[in-house]
Image (tube, rainbow, N blue to C red; front, side, top):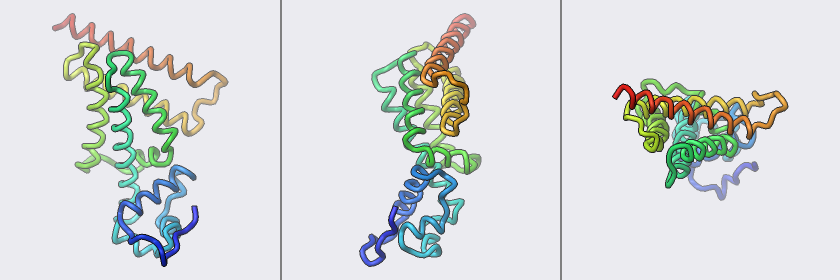
Length: 200
């Protein structure tokens, strides 16, 4: 990326700062993001960024929030018109593609704590909520949809995180492994639904 010409650049805004950091993160990896690098990219001084983000921690927080918003939107789009196994598969693929499309921004979701931050907690809650709502076709009660949504989040995040970091080294097709994962998850959710029906 070339630095902006300060004579023709638009006035600096928080959105522009975060957009620039996101572009660096996705193109070169999260660890390439720094205030100095973003300032250089924008053709401005590092102190000027502090008017728009609360230091590097604030920038990382904004990237993590953006990653969760993108993820929830993609999950919601994937689940529309689908239910049960089809919904799980579509959301799993959407999660995996989001990480492939935005590896640096997604990595930021693990770099800033959510606990005690209402906006970040709400963003995580929306991700889990979308996953849970898409499972209505399995006949789960509300609490079990939350449990299953958390399980899906853990499985999709784990697989995608490892994949993005070359954490699946064996010479076995990754797409087939992901299909197997979806099958295991769906079987487990059906088992959970059956157990709930039996005790209900």
